[in-house]
Image (cartoon, rainbow, N blue to C red; front, top):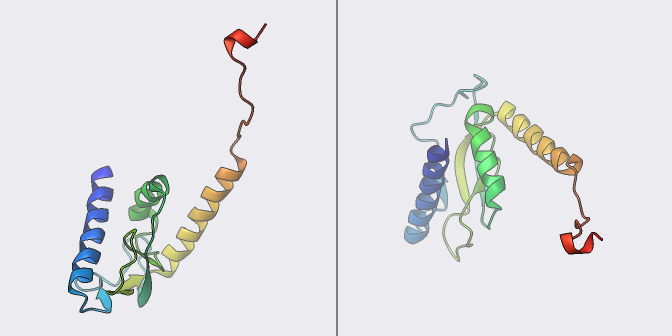
Length: 134
C-alpha cells in the first residue's frame, strides 16, 4: 500500500512538473484512457474541470487519505493536489472524473477524522520528574 501511495504521489508531481516546464497547457486532462464508471460505487462519473490546489500539506494527513482513497473514494476529489510551490505560469485546472458517491464518502471521512481528533484525549499536564516526586 505504501508503494502505491508513493508511486501515485510521484506520478502527480511528475505530471505537474512536466506541464509546468512546457507551460503550454492550461488544463491537464486526466480522463484519457480512464473508465467513466466508478470501480467502488459502480456509478457513471461526471467529467469535471477542477482547480489545482498548490501548497504544502501535512504528510500524515496525506498518507492517511491516500491509504483510504483506493477502496473508499477513488474519484472523490473536487480539488486536485498540486506541488507545494505555486508556479508563476502553467496549469491551474485538471479535467478528471468525479463520482458523486465518492465525494460524499470523502466528506464523511474528513468529518470522522475531525471528530476523532476532537474526542481524542489530550494531556497537557507534564508528569513530574523523578527528582521532584518527594
